[in-house]
Amino acid sequence: MSPTTTPAQERQERWQELCRDPSLQDLPYKIETNERGQIVLSPPKAAHSDLQGRILDAFREARPEGRGLPEFPITTSGGVRVPDVVWMSEGRLEEITETGDPPTRAPDLCVEIMSESNDWSEMDEKRALYLEAGAEEVWVVDKDGAVRFFGKQELEASELVSGFPERV
Image (cartoon, rainbow, N blue to C red; front, side, top):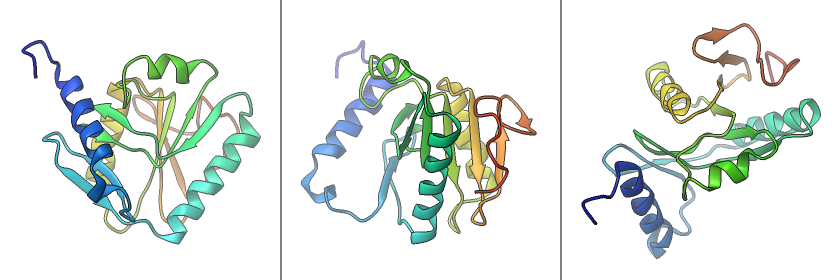
């Protein structure tokens, strides 16, 4: 790598390397990297996927002019993280992709769904990383579907997706 390579570019290059690795192509896991570029694997569960689908459906209903996507990679200062669901306003995807692959700019909204392997310390860390990368809100959904909304601090309700239910 050249001496002018930034940490974000190094994380993006590591991610591209992982994407090309044939041994990782058919893993039944969500892949992220930590700040050292090490692979972090998360096995999905059916209930987790169901919650992702419910959130995406609710986005389509509440904000049809935007775009909801599952598992969108974001280059953060803590590695490449992959929120379970994201939502972005019109034009944001183009703006985001101009920062490289995976992007260094987060969508407007990132959603993490908790599982047995997560704790609030990890959710706090991910929330901080997504906000630092430009997300306006981060939501955390527990395994029962209860939604907690965060901006710079915890919110009573989403300011981006008004009327979004407190439980999905």
